[in-house]
Image (cartoon, rainbow, N blue to C red; front, side, top):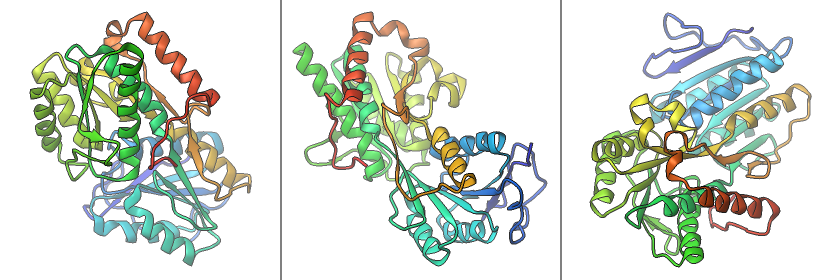
Amino acid sequence: MSLRRIVAFGAGLVAASVALAGCAPAPEEGAGAEDAGCVRMVTNSGGLEDRSFNQSSWEGLQQAEDEYGVDAQALVSTSETDLAPNVRQAVDSGCPLVVTVGWELAESTLAEAEANPDVSFAIVDETVEADNVKPVVFDTAQASFLAGYLAAGVSETGVVATFGGGNQPPVTLFMDGFVDGVARYNEVHGTDVRALGWSKETQDGSFTGDFEDINKGKVLTEGFIDQGADVILPVAGQVGEGAAAAAVEHGGTSVIWVDSDGYETLPAEFRPVILTSVLKNTQQAMVEIVGDVVDDAFTNEPYVGTLENGGVEIAPYHDLEALVTPDLQGEIEGLRQAIISGELVIESPSAP
């Protein structure tokens, strides 16, 4: 098995499957590009263990290591000033594939892609148009529609809520699907469940302004709970942990996580309040893209994760499964199949 290294620039942090003693030197030109090749990943400022798309992208590259024998290394950005230098460092490694994660890296990815046409790039959760850049995006509105329907179906107060880290398409796409799912439940059942925190019509709502300050998520969630919300969907990376903390403290409130299965990735203390998660199967996308590079079949055609191809989904209900009646489960499965068949189309101005 090839060495798995994670190199953090800016703060000198190093963490890895194989721990390193300090900030490793930049790989030599072409290092690791022999045999099956290598891949470099650059995180956004959320860091590698963000319990979100940085972490899941890295997990996918680790799977690709095992499957294809490539050498995967991650350059961890700890601040905005690390972003451009880290992308440049990844390119200088000589690896044929560079993966960047998040909209913050779009500008640097485009600049390096234009300057290095022989290098293949993939950017997660953002669209960059260039001959050698493959966007990896997810139609999360499909899965969050199911989550919104679920939230409305289990709510005891008739109030649910969502908030984001920032008003950006990858965030608001979740929120659009969620409120549409609530609306569909009301239409089917003749109820009036309210969804706080987001207006699809005006494309505006509640945001913390960042993806790292957990306390902001807690304060905002406490405000929703005070208004009666008993199911919360935070679309805010690490900030969402604040929502889980508020739910644990107040009781009677559950949380729908995003990107990864929060029941598996969050601290165990939050498991009792995780209703489900809106999943992005970034791991699958990474393995496929590495395979394309190894097979000399890489293209810039976007990878779009959907319910049909397994790129998005909702997670099991875990400890809160008893809240979801068999009838509600059946309705959600029916909606899933309707979306997959094309009978039901979930629309959003942020859809990929």
